[in-house]
Image 1: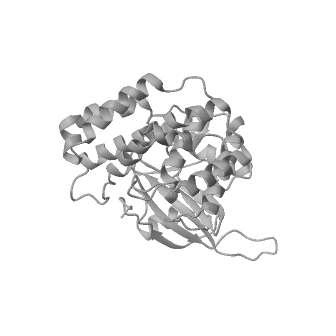
Image 2: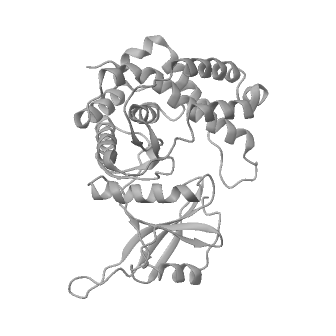
Image 3: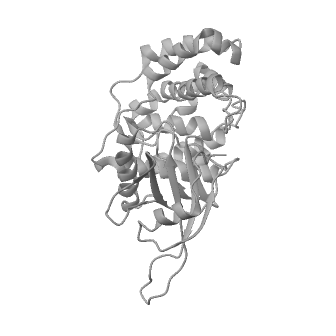
Length: 332
C-alpha cells in the first residue's frame, strides 16, 4: 500500500480543477511505491481541435517522505527538459498559473503525464539493451539541463547509515554483514574515482522504474533520487539491478552484455569509465545495502510498506568485489 494520505472525491476534484485537463472522472490509489502517495487520475481531457474530447490519464503524487520541498523544482523541471528532448519520460503538468506543484495540508502534490507500459520482473537481453540505450539517451539529453543537485545518497551517506545501524544492528540482518560493510566502505573510501565525467543521473533505474511495451522502453519514471554525479555510476546502478535475479544470487552475463552494448550504442564509455566500473558497481551495491539495512532495522512492524532485503544487494556486492568478475566490464 502506498497511499499514506487519503483525499476525498471532492478534494481531488477541486485539485484537478486547478489544471487545464478537464474534469475528474476517476481516481484510484496505486499500491506501488514506498515514499509517496500516488493515484491514477482520469479526466474528461481538453477540447480537441474539432471541439471533441477524449478522456486523459495522469499520475497524481503527494510527496510524503524523503523528498525535500526545495528539491521538487529540480525533479519536475528535469522531467520537462528530458521529455522535450525526446526521452521516454513523463512531462510535469503545470497548473493554470504555471506552477509545477501545489500544496495540500502542508504537503506538495504534482500531476504527471501518464505513459503506458509495464515493469518487467524477468528482463530479456533485448529489453536490457533497450534500457541501456534509454539511459545513455537520458545522460546526453541532460547535458544542457541548467539545474544541479548533490547526491544525498553518496559515499558519506553510506558511512553515516553504517554508523547509525552499528555492527550489532547489521549482525541482526546477517552475521557476515558487519564485516562486509566495514571492508567495502574502507575500500570505496580509498578507491572512489575523482576525475570521471559528471552529469545529471537517474541514480535509481530499477526495473520498477522502467515501463516497457515489448522490447521498447515506453517510460523512465521516479526521478526522485536524480542528482549530479559520476555518469558511469548510473550505469553501475542500473547494471546491479538489471543483471541479477531479485535475490542477488544469480548473475546473467547475457543481460550484462546487452545492457552495456545498448548504452554504448548511444554514448560510448571512455577507457577511464570502463576501468572504473568495477569500483562503481561495488559502490552501487553498497548504496542499496545501506539504505535497505537502515529501513530493515527501523521500519515499524505495522508499517504499510514491507522493507526490502539488504542481503539481495550484499550478494551483488560480494560478486562485484571478487576480482574474477572484474573482466565483465572490459570492452568487447
